[in-house]
Length: 56
Image (cartoon, rainbow, N blue to C red; front, side, top):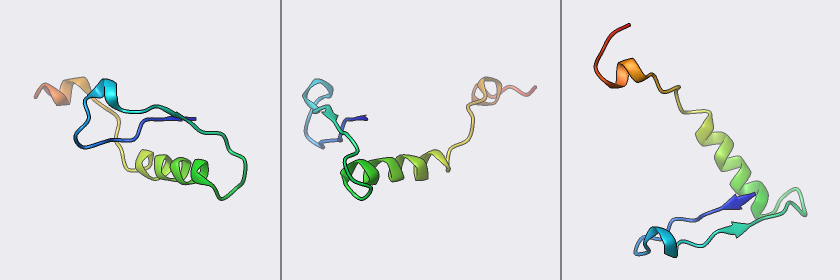
């Protein structure tokens, strides 16, 4: 997995990209994967017509 942590005072090109491998079931890879799954479960599909204020 490639993760790019957010650094408050950094610009886009200054953010590190970290390559993580899952070596154990309880390491940092699992922490990032769990967080992605939690966030992904809260999002809704983007609907272009609704976003522009139009109805179907």
